[in-house]
Length: 275
Image (cartoon, rainbow, N blue to C red):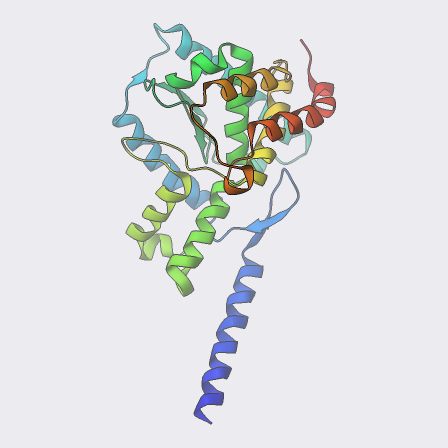
């Protein structure tokens, strides 16, 4: 009898947890796909703002007042912002960008070949990626790619998955207020933003390719030639030292796969490119 009660209790918990997951799925405005979202975008953006400000305080931010590269980052960022906002206006979905307060900063770090965008449009480009982008057009693709991760809410999905693993039954968004330290820790790992290092954790292969696709779109709509993305990834291939792991062992798609997929995306996105 006791065993039956225990089994019944376990099944009830499983069913309730399953129901929670179904309820906690949200439809992404870009893809139309449902994805796990246990924390609201507003709460994610609040965490993002705090962590972004702390990161900037501990980093060497290059002022655009006297630096041409920082000016370029600002210029590209504003064009991509305009393209994104125009896109959602055309879709009659301006509310999706509610709370976005766009910022674009160039950070001095010559050894980190990277850039990232946190929820709410908080963007950082490291000086280490500029020798690889080489030009404003390639930078537009890179920044568009990172903005796409935020718009596609990839980090939110990863954070939600981590909350299920680590907080169990307390995965509801109320955990943000009741478990601030645990939630902040999960946020930091999900978005990979350290107060001193600031290196993005790799997204899944599917998410990377998805961000590539929309990154091309934003670049095209901003007046940048999307074909430059292939040249950028060819340059990335050349700077990699040592052997890279087989694609199925890596969370990132191989550069060859990436270039091939970009070729497939180009015919569609080129329709939006105007010199």
